[in-house]
Length: 347
Image (cartoon, rainbow, N blue to C red; front, side):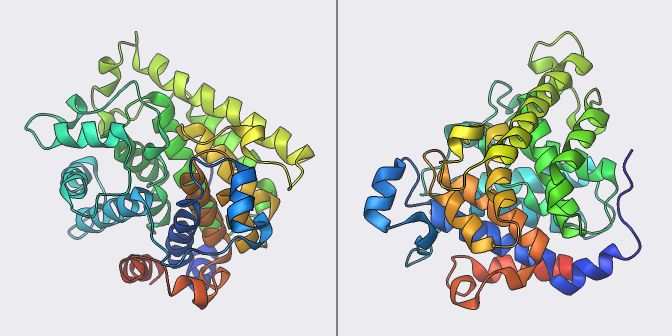
């Protein structure tokens, strides 16, 4: 098992305000990708100009990606008000937050069908596992998971379990769980000072180490709902798909031309593992140029808002709040909520 942090990591993380940087970066990427989603690159560049000059929209409205990220963040805050993070403390506020989001008049940003169906079922009585859509591995599972990687003091077990649980309430496919776990782990590693150059290798090692591990305390009998012969078979399906896409990321980074649509290299991002992979490519091509990474992620032919929100989260975790010029950060929707949560975890 990998070591969680070094003694110096918390000080570095606090100094750069990694949590605030992550959440603001996620929302900025989301806002940049909103107008370019569903549009091919020739039309994007025709309407908005060269991708390296892509502007932040005015107003900088976000999608359900940021809304649900805030829901996960608030659920974490509630769950830890009176003690350490446990499945019992986390599942109920998470359920309440998801249902409240689904019923909110602000839920008007073309949310995913899986989230809407699952949240409708979560509003009824019964175990949450009954609402989980075990056939869905849409990127709704991991576009919202960044807060789990930001909470300080969690054990690796808590972080992995919470990342998978927040996905499983709606997206119960094993690949959705594994991709969410990997996404939260990437945010955590970057926030704690991991170098981008070695990030893909660290994620591959983590995936191999956890390939056969089913977090029963956090997931309960979810695996039985997918009709797998065993919990091990269930989780290995997900981790193997994630390992395959990480191989594609490594290959893409060896040969990537920044002018090429990243979706051609690692997928369009509609599914969880491809959203993670393509966001990683966009971030890792420009690890010290956060605005360029956001622009590249937003100027893609696939699920541009989800790809860009994850790329923004990775850049913000790596560089901290200083990555984002105030002229941009000050305009993004839900700024006050994002900064309040970030300040809680940066303190």
